[in-house]
Amino acid sequence: MQQTLVLVKPDGVARGLTGQILSRIEAKGYRIADLRLVQPERALLEEHYAEHDGKPFFEPLVEFMLSGPSVAVRLEGDRVIEGFRSLAGTTDPTTAAPGTIRGDLGRDWGLKVQQNLVHGSDSEESSARELALWFA
Ligand code: CMP
Image (cartoon, rainbow, N blue to C red; front, side, top):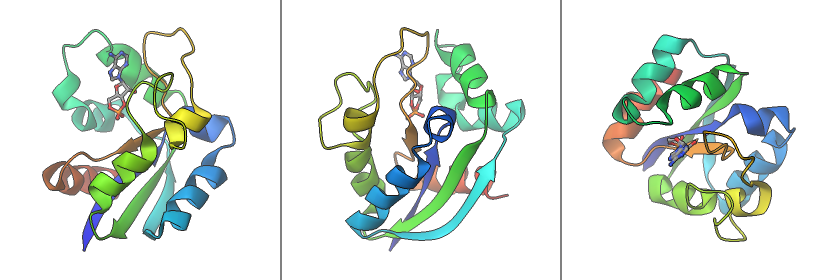
């Protein structure tokens, strides 16, 4: 059994899509083991996104993630890391496949950062690190 960190990012929360997104996750059969609304501090985000430090979208990404609360979910299930990333769709919401969360509910807003509604850990190592940060 695996766990992953899912975030409904500030754009998803602000657009009132949290319920729909959680419904899709539950309909797929994954278990919500913990959930909280978090207004993160800059230090948490800089650690969470450390691998992107130095990229042109790093500062806009941190600012976007500071712009409002995210819903953090500890999600559990067999192969849930790859399963949730498949459910989320690819990073760019404009071209993410229809049927995915980003493909159905997201689009480009002409900003410096891709506001793509959700985050999912990309490996067991990231999942352990990110869950410890968001559910400290
Ligand atoms: P996420 O899965 O949370 O991981 C890093 C985030 O950075 C990503 O979702 C997007 O919100 C953003 N991102 C990744 N690549 C780009 C890019 N090329 N331009 C703008 N934003 C990006």
